[in-house]
Length: 314
Ligand SMILES: NC(=O)c1cnc(N)c2cc(Br)sc12
Image 1 (cartoon, rainbow, N blue to C red):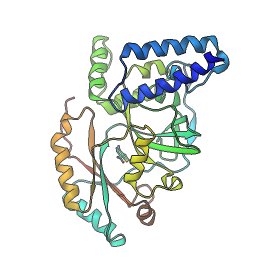
Image 2 (cartoon, helix red, strand yellow):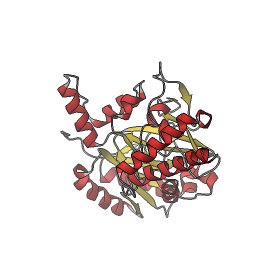
Image 3 (cartoon, rainbow, N blue to C red):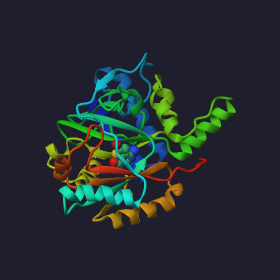
Image 4 (cartoon, rainbow, N blue to C red):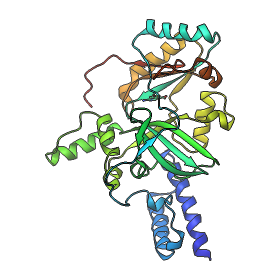
């Protein structure tokens, strides 16, 4: 029946248009055209309830208001990071790594000031989003994470894929939210991280949908099972799967290259449209990461450089 075929066609088209707009920031159609396709799909889905699909672009917002969040155990612990606060501590980190991995190469990324999140895809379909929690047990916040338009509901990868990253509230969304709350005499959020955490914990996803959250993904959990050997390759694969990966990153061969990038980003971080509280330095080679291993709660193959605390008025 061609209407059922049209439903599948529109679902695929709307996902592609959403990717172009929210991930590539390069839409190929006008908002009006996008809305016309969405309205056409909504009408066809109402006519064909037998085609219901929770991952349809029409199902991102709405659904039941939850009583609470289910607890979920992570397959692999969600680690936090050790910290370094200055050049000398960064040198010490590098020396500890080089003692085991003499010709190490690093990838340096921005440390997004949001909340850590795990996404599970199965056979190419988004199935679950889980907060970090205590690192072992998190909360299922799938209904809220589905409302973030840059997160794909489908990916072109079979089997089980787990992706981790940071959900955050852009500075513009934060300013808009707090000015609305001020106008309504409500308590203001202290910073974008708190506002993002409060939004993800909304039991009614229509509230979360209005908060203008976004996310960057920076960890392909079972990358080696998918034939990937380095962190940089993993980030490129996440991009290929249409996940939103932060392009502001640099491969560095030594501490001085790391420090140069830290100073470059530190000088321009207030221009960024989102808050960062430091930089993340990771060993690039995944086998070297495995050889270095982790301590009780933090990896030996990565650390976070934290910017000096300052009074930031956003
Ligand atoms: N790029 C990254 O690895 C990264 C970025 N932002 C963050 N808040 C975190 C936290 C951990 Br744990 S890793 C990481």
